[in-house]
Image 1 (tube, rainbow over the protein chains, first blue to last red):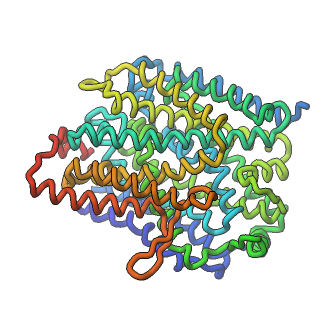
Image 2: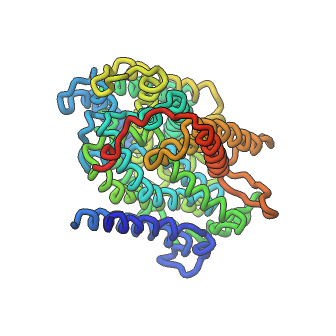
Image 3: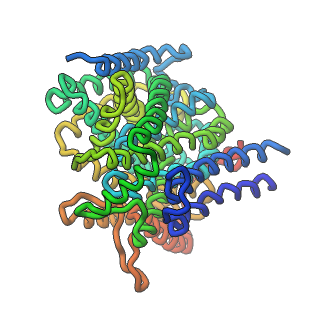
Length: 61
Length: 506
């Protein structure tokens, strides 16, 4: 059952992207990239790490 | 006439064609057997699966169309990035479960599962038809991606509008798909993805540097988009925010239920391989994100065209040295061959197993004879479609394909978790949604500008612009729930569930 609870982490990326109004702006920029672009690219990496975390937690008894 | 660029291009395409035929010997299997031909014997590990699934999902058309959409429409085109991120947590949950039940009971398609789960032949056929209908224009779009490259190469590659070279490449593709099955794209995917990564990494290092850095590229693009006859922006206009979010979410639901996705997922040897790949495949999404931004580089570089599918080939050949341009263009063409082969295999399986009902009771040891012939026929049909039908038709049908594909979510995806919906209600929900969503899409094309993904509806006193696929899915659910209530109340018995709880567990 605890394993199922960790699966809730998989909802986090959906929340992060849910409302574009949150990230639909230019500032703050990073390396010249407007916020709209670097925020969404960053969440690709974080999504991957969250899934890896769920796998690791699921393996641990 | 010959150049380093053309020699590298031809060399790489010839290499993968040979690999396609040689792949038949990989693992020394009997390719007359269905699961050997269609699913590579279900024995691909993490690395092979990563290349295969990545090579399958991130198609040549994606590489051409996503930057082209950014080039043409600005920020809206970036929806591919959230889409290609959230698809993986969704896939992690749903595909783990589906892989397990498919392994336990020997399924090769989503429709195999639906038939077993609901005991309903009509629902099985509905799911199968949806998959085939959605795949055909998708294969055609791969051909269009290849054509854009051939036209850019010019010379004898462009003879007869590129159709001569296209026909040779596609006939060879059909031939090695017939002989080697899924092993051919699995082997070729190694070359394809290596070339794609080299191309994209080189592009995002070389091109923005020559254009004065990313900050400058965004600034120039913002000004150029604002100054167009039909202005766009590097940010979303507020009324497009809902469209953006619904396109990302709707496309995410559709991605892994396409027949070609199912095929490459079921080729994995274990549930762990599928799960690990869900954590590793976002590397492709990151690459896709940077590739999308090359659309802005094209604007900053002053490339002006109305044929947006030529944007990426033009950009790459303008800024790369000859040998790298040859490798990059080969990457796009090979990037079309891999998914086209898998789409043909996935659709052929649906035809043979679910529409013709070839394999009961014994699917695992069935003969691959019929699906092999069908895959051949489907590839040649897609080629003919591109040669004889205008390009815009294929693009419109592909968009309709996504809108259709998502309508199997209640039967297939929720079916993995529950039998609360009556199979006849699922069938009715599917039918109504297919008709209404198609009509909505057709109504957006009334002005003669092609089908659009979004439609503005006036609901509850406000107007909402959102992805048609999701409107369709909402209708689908409403009809399914209401019809289920009626059918359960009337005590009309559903078909028998052939699966058991333990089939889904490991």
